[in-house]
Amino acid sequence: MSVNDDRPVMMAPAADPAPLGLAAFALTTFLLSAANAKWMNSATGDAWLGYAFAYGGLCQLLAGMWEFRNRNVFGATAFSTYGGFWIGLGLWALLVAPAPAGAGPVAAAAHAAAAGKDLGWILLAFAIFNTYMLLWSTQVNWAVFGVFLTLEATEIILFIGFFQGSSGATTIKIGGYVGVATAVVAWYTSAAGVINGMRGAPLLPMGKPFGMRPAA
Image (cartoon, rainbow, N blue to C red):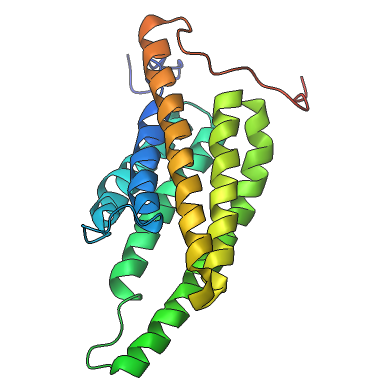
């Protein structure tokens, strides 16, 4: 092919990155939700933190970039955003949430209360994003809709709990339970995407698009 040859170059289609993105989202959500549900009383509760960068963050962000390659605007937006969410949350937990060095008990308690309000605002912002993605997920399938529906409930319950301050412990715990359910739904959707993609035909059901129909 000459330098000035303007014939189109056909590129092989990429494999579906959605199962990877969903698995990364599921595992990190599970770890943080298990901590919120107080299932990790014998552990530090920070098992999610490293995976917020390496798996829920980086792998989801990569899945989002590959979805751009596949011209899937929904998947690209969803995975890139929640990859950024986990990276941002990890940075917040490391850089902002800890009380300043040398802070006394009163100052540390006040900082912890303010940090809880920060989390409330963060989760409220992502709940707003998740609301329209929940609506548009009806154009994908029932399994993906289930992920966004349970995630919507998780984010709403948690931001209410964090805004409640010291009285919101029970609400946050409930949010942890719903978050575990979100992870289970995401894991199922990931597993279905893997095996269905391997077989080239549906084995695990994911449902079909529903609701309003896109323009032809």
